[in-house]
Image (tube, rainbow, N blue to C red; front, side, top):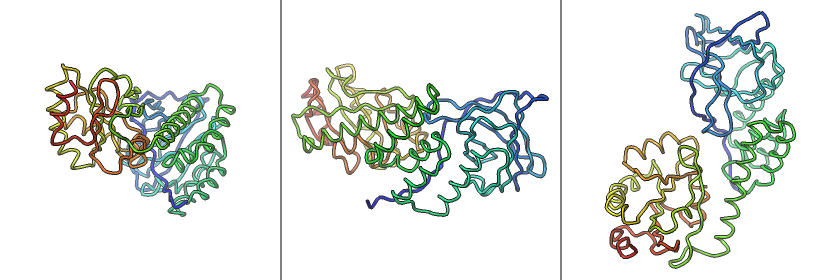
Length: 358
């Protein structure tokens, strides 16, 4: 295997803030962060599904020395947490048994977990693993498997499976299934377990679709358009097959692709001209992991007002792109009312091809 992996910062959607309640039986999370004097601190619990809002657990200010304390009456739930200090973010895990957790670090390196921890073996374990990953730099597949196995809990192993193997998830379906089963056994019915199970199911479905497409050979005019079923920016899954009966332009693009952005005005023009006659657009974004905001912004900026926007945010590892043999964008496929491929990359003659099918 030639593929190399790099650890990446995990992004989740921001959340609203909740008030704090301190008391004699408080559960405490505190830190001492050099260079963070008088900065705002936000603590949140986050989830695998980026469309699930975080649970805000406290917002306080550091003192002049960079010290802060967050107190709660309720125990911290087992899960993944995000601490935002100014423009820096630090992710970590807690096992739910902690009473008082404290850590020390420097503002410039807390995002790489270069910290010391007291009061939580789970958080300390997570920090050690991230520190080792940062030192390793490029992580090969065997190293990724080793790091996963070093996870101290099923949740941590599932998290690192997603982080380190997610870019080539189809090749590691067995690892995802194993991690999902262990997590479901350890945290039955928990949000983390159900979300990871859904992620694993999606990977298996996409792998089956790619294998079916490869067995059928390259996309050809006249063949049924292979199914695509992915979430949109709002998390709702949109399937190509739901548009059967319409003439549909499948448009592979990305917010970072200048030729795609330059082509968008013409697609918008054709859409508005023929949408009431049975024409629609199904846009598949090849944006990178963590670039959801850029994807959404490009949709708005370019006036791509149709509803059918989907992506797995996997860049060139996009399952639909592999399914359709796309190795350059923009790439388009025009589908007739029966769901068959009618034209491949109709650009200069797009309107003519659409009118013939309508």
